[in-house]
Every structure is written in structure tokens, then in C-alpha cells.
Image (cartoon, rainbow, N blue to C red; front, side, top):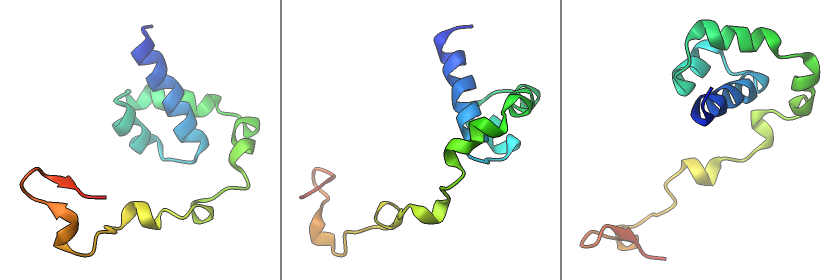
Amino acid sequence: MNNTTKARYEMAKKMLIGHIDVEEVALMTELPIDEVQKICDEVTPADAKTLESLDNMDIDFGPILRDTYETSDDFDSEDSEFRI
């Protein structure tokens, strides 16, 4: 198994521990669904314990998901870069 494939398996395990659906994990990691299901079957409650007290409401993603630039003055269309 090469490093890229190994990284995909490790990422799939982390995503499954985070309670992401098998189908979504397969789509994002480009692993076959049956392989992702095998990984899911191997995930133990002890693995999930690291995330048990954290849910998506504990993290404020607001500024990341919103466009914080209110005016077109913040964007220089000539060189396509935001001014800070």
C-alpha cells in the first residue's frame, strides 16, 4: 500500500469516527464503499470517545462560511486579489 492510499484509509477512519456516512466518506476519499464499510466495522467505541463531547455546534464556522467582504472596494479586479 502506497502512502497516498494509506492516507486515504486513515482519513476515512477519522471521518467515520466523526460520524460521517459511509457513502460520503467513500465519495470524499475515493475509496470503494465496501472498503469504507470494512473500516467502519473496525471503528470501536474507544475510537469515537475522543469526539464524544464535541459536536458541530461547538465550533463556530460562521466567519469561514460567510463572505466577510461587504464592499467591492475590498476586491481588486485587476490583479484578482483581496486587499487586506
